[in-house]
Each structure stands twice: as structure tokens, then as C-alpha cells.
Length: 209
Image (cartoon, rainbow, N blue to C red; front, side, top):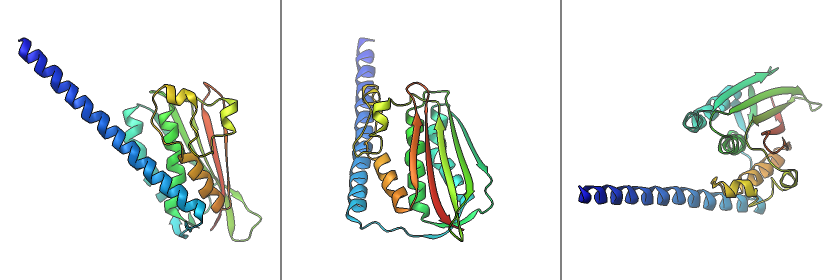
């Protein structure tokens, strides 16, 4: 009986160690990829590959990718559109998805189990002929951010102490990369947040229709 207990404890320990190694390997790989991506962006070697894109496909792909993490944390996810008259646009689908995934990924990480994430896409007129301004907002009711950290949320390797203390994994490059991509698209990105009241990231980009 004692032998079985020791064996079970050893098996549990080995499984736990392999799980930690797997998590750390994933984090290390993401860190390397983010650093390489940031380096390419800063050196000017990243160019937007604008093609015809069906906007509902972007939202469908986004939901498909994040659904597993949403279900694992028992979060409620809502995606809706408002006044979107042009579903076919010209943009870099890969980079647009990257921006949205970085933002939504953070919302999932920093929203406790049972929380809510709202994704909204809104189309607004543009003064530029043949274009429309698309507003992508991601709102959660998670832990939020302090006023001091808001000024640095788009800086490279920037992570708030509440996140590091709670053990939430991250590279601190996702928001910096997103900001650079949005700048390349000629758009803007901002955050409205408060500690304990969640965060809302708002991306505004002019896209050819």
C-alpha cells in the first residue's frame, strides 16, 4: 500500500514537471516569435499584404481560434456588428487577425472565470473616397489596469505587477506589436480601463471598401 502511494506521488510529480516544461516551452516560443516580429516591424521589413477580405470570415476565424480558451474559463463571449454596410474590404487579413487576437487573448487571460468579453465591429464614414473607418472594440470585465500602467501598456515588455504577481503568462510584447501594426494601417488604438472594472481596447482603422 505504501509502495503504491509513493508510486502515485512520483507519477503525479513527473506529470506536473512535464506540464510545467510544456507551458514554459510554449511561452519561450511565443517570446522568440514576438521578439522576431517586433524586430522586423522596427526595421521596416514588415509590409502589409492587402487583399480582398470578407469581414465575417475574420470574425469567424477569431471565434474559432479563441473558443477553446473561452470555454475552458467558462467566459461569455459576444460578437456583434453595428452599421456595417460593407462586408468586403481591402486589408492585410493576417495582420488584422494578429491585432485582434492579441487584444482578445489578453482579455481572456485577465478576465476571471465566469466573466464576459464583448467584441464589436462598427463602420463609420470616412472623408477619404472609397474608404470607411472600421472600429473594432474588445471589452471585458476583468481585473483592469492602473492609471499609471495605462501610459505604458503599448510599450515593449510592459506588464503590470498585478499580472506578474498572479502568475499570468505573457511576453509583454503583444500590445506593442498591435500598436505598430495599427500605425502601419494608418489607424489608432486606445484603451479605457480602471482597476477592478475591466478594460476596453478600441482600434480604428481606415479600410478600402
